[in-house]
Length: 397
Ligand code: ATP
Ligand code: MG
Image 1 (cartoon, helix red, strand yellow):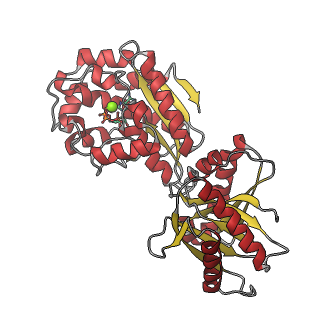
Image 2 (cartoon, rainbow, N blue to C red; image 1 turned 135 degrees about the vertical axis):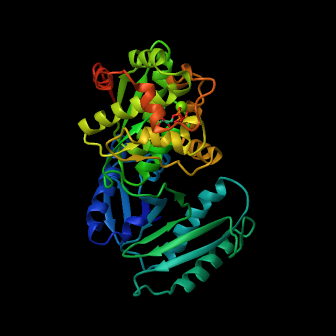
Image 3 (cartoon, rainbow, N blue to C red; image 1 turned 90 degrees about the horizontal axis):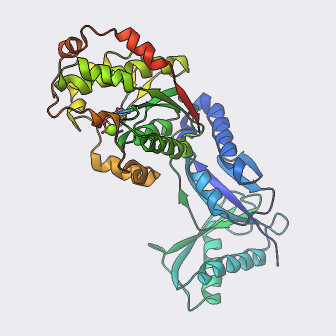
């Protein structure tokens, strides 16, 4: 028997296009993978020929958590568990045949009969066979070895046995999709307004997928929103951190501000007034922490406070840009993303959000800026903002 080594091959996409910045993007990507894999063992990680090779330097019992971790890093398009063998016997076709049989045996053990094809790529032209010749040789040999379990289908096979001839030989069949995008840390820092709902975690995920490093702010109105609501938001932040990496969550004690607004503002302008206060406070926390944009989960027309008119009244109070990556998405599509990234189940837990506690029965759907200013007339806005900034709690995830 010839030994093989099980390693992971990861592919990246878009960052290959970044011209002069390419080196910086690649370094960041490798750094993010290293950090993500740190709790899972020790690895040698190397970038060669526009691929990332991840090699365990100690015995690994289960590759699944490693694959999951690697494919959750933004910038990675896909990853495969790969067998590598034959630096010395690379050109010995017997070795290739033996390893291919061993590899397929594993798949067959898991059950059933399969259609398959062999797909080879030869980047070292000194190898004795061309790619089509490898396909024919191996395909034939495998069919002969497993006549009852295998049949060839070149159009829609159940699996493809990939063979790559480089300085060594590589075979694999699984290709696990990654989350694509750009490496976190290459797109500046943004402050996500994170509520317990379905939308805002998805908004954070989307901006992080463009390389933005995230911090989050949650407006908590105890006892109107209970500890469970807060725990839920912390849990969501934790789930976001799976993709976004390290994340700091700032928790604002919003109760007094909310009570003052409730007593002061016309009912139909309450939500807008609240949202304007959130924006002002969030922007201050953002600036103090090096974030140059706010991020919200708003989507045009989804609720009364998300009409164009309403969005304009909240936009103007933020001195930094407000990113709303979900603005043109359907609730269905947002929900689908939430399910895919694993935040949905937490988001639908029933704990109240501070916006729903005091919500007006008939909010103004087309508030003007003047409406908003009248609603706030007589309030010491600067004072309220300062009040929101004391007692900040910070949770690091
Ligand atoms: P979500 O599902 O994200 O809660 P939503 O559809 O419930 O969104 P709103 O409650 O109107 O919409 O909130 C709009 C956006 O304002 C949210 O996506 C979020 O970015 C922000 N937001 C709302 N409530 C809070 C809060 N308590 N703390 C932080 N941000 C909030
Ligand atoms: Mg909400």
